[in-house]
Image (cartoon, rainbow, N blue to C red; front, side):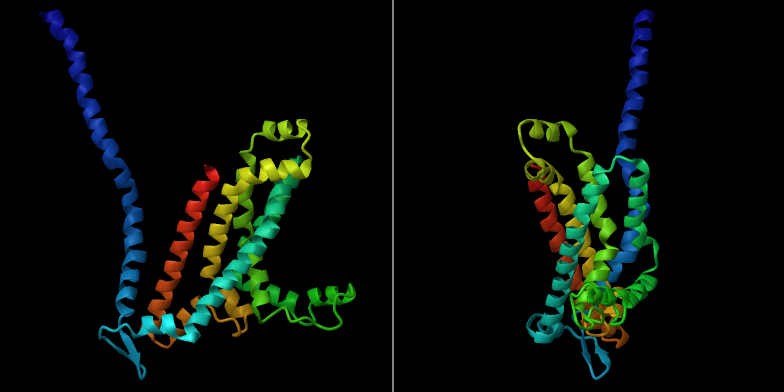
Length: 301
């Protein structure tokens, strides 16, 4: 009898900790997430709910009228002025993403194919450098570079590509060039990360079967790096949607996008327009993220 109790005792001693461990495993993740969830609730959810409330008010003769109205929503949907702002914002974000991707993919490929570690480190530092510099300093630098008498126009004239100065600043061109430079690290490194996961044996097998560099890239490298490309597009496009300082400085007041419109409306205490503009930006960003996630699933399938 005593031997049976002795044999059963370890079973009971083990069963209790397992039960407690299961309860702790369920609660522990929520406890670790609690600070982030509280910060998100205070800094994002509550302000967005306030914006949502203000979007139904009206702004008349410099005063905020706290009455339910869909006037501001109708203006954003049917007024040609606001439609132009939304379309210009999407166009700027799309051009920035395409340009950053066109420059970033070859850079990521070069970074992947480099065999010397010191060259890889220096190239990574150069690619990452736009994030280190202040956005204001960087924007002023681009204004100097793209000015009518700046180095870029001087080089174009010296190469015989133009007879006079080309307008590259205080317009959409300067904004897109600067934003593409800023978002280059967010494009290069996701693509580079997907390239590092490619099995070298796949490329070697394609070349052993007679495929050249172009065919190997088209049939092996590019399809396997599509998840990185989709992630890069998602990051660059959503960041370009919310860009404020660069369009304000390099646009020279001629490039009016949604973030600038929200800022101007907030300065005028026109809370309904600012709220609807912010909500439109949020909805566009959510749709882009959802579309990219769907494309990411297809590319990984």
